Image 1 (cartoon, rainbow, N blue to C red):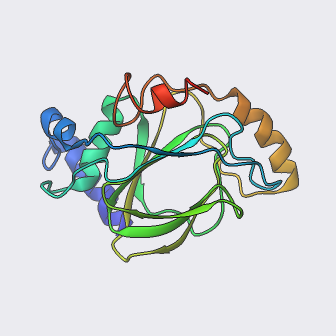
Image 2: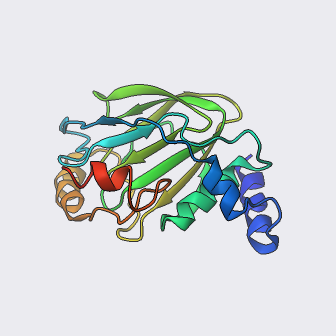
Length: 201
């Protein structure tokens, strides 16, 4: 499925077919009350000591659109969250120590544990958005066969996948502290969401 989705994304990028207009992507966004969780360092997964995980349930209305993944890609890109990909969520615990990450659920549903082995399990579904500050552990525990996730990253930082070794943990904790707060929320832009929540911390 993910090979097909990558090909579809390439065709849309080249031809513009299937991509939402600016107005369509903007109108798909719903103002919802975010759930925020500040996960603790459990000795394996450092999480982020300062910035909370942000979860927006049902923040994007996808049903009218031919390609829901393209809606997320457009929103993320317009708010300067780039290097987007289409895939699922890995079924092993991992985190990123040098960048924040956004996950938009384009199709299907999944049970995902955020925050490491002692974190919290969320039932995520199409239209949901999760923003993971650098260091946030995540692992897919179960997923529907049609699960499709769009991920992206802010311009500051670089991708690194960590899986939880002692040596990794010490180095990761130092890297996490250096990742700057992005200038905009991946779906709400510069004046709402992450920009308010993380700048209060």
